[in-house]
Image (cartoon, rainbow, N blue to C red; front, top):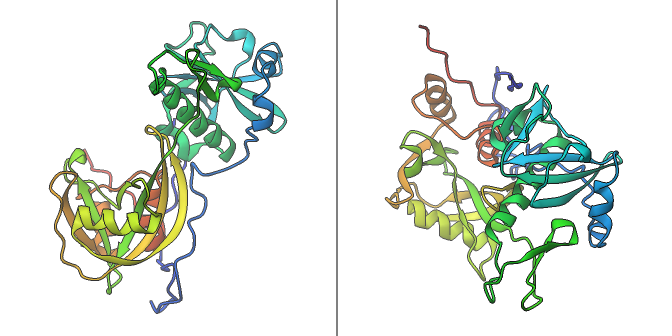
Length: 328
């Protein structure tokens, strides 16, 4: 299955600068992030009703998004939803919300159900999100996020007893001490850092093999502001002191439970010291250097579904070029 890719740019107009490269003020907010779309009415007041979810499962108008190990059925570039009558027994059922007047439920299954509709591809969120509609991407990211939470919060953190799901799958209750436990999201900052020459700092993570470069990121610590996290994380990973952190946009990233909060920041100096644990290499890129090395395949960059790619392309001023295809 092939999904659309942005057309290569013929010219670069840098956000925050005019056609002559002169500063024109702060960078604009990121727009059209693939996983940040709305369109789903989550119905918080409805899902708290005890009879709400059972009633939906009795209605043939209800649609069900089946999830198996983080993968969903996709056909013709859209999520393939099914009816409740075709649904096998599922341990985790969650009310996702109302979309265009239709109620949608998540069924998180251990394996692909037999007899499921043919002609579908079972794909992960990273594989397909950039090609989905805003509605489908919103449903998919919500489903993956809540399924991941259920998978890792089966026991009460107070007493260790097995918990049970209530409120249409959005709360886990401990039958031993009656405590209620709600989904958690881990805030993380991710930063596009520029220097006085408007070069971009990118780092290579040890897990990526040293040739994939991305913006720096890290989790927000307890009692810490987002801006303080930007300054601290950048210093820890690169040895670079930054100032003027500016919020750029956010995107859920349910791998397993993050909310990525995008920022831009300006470096005081350009000397870098990789931390040697997470970051093994750091480089300052001009736009020409980055485009050439991506095109030649010397380095790779984050996929189009990520906020990291959006931050890089906002600085670059256009979609990055695609790598050249090698001839046989």
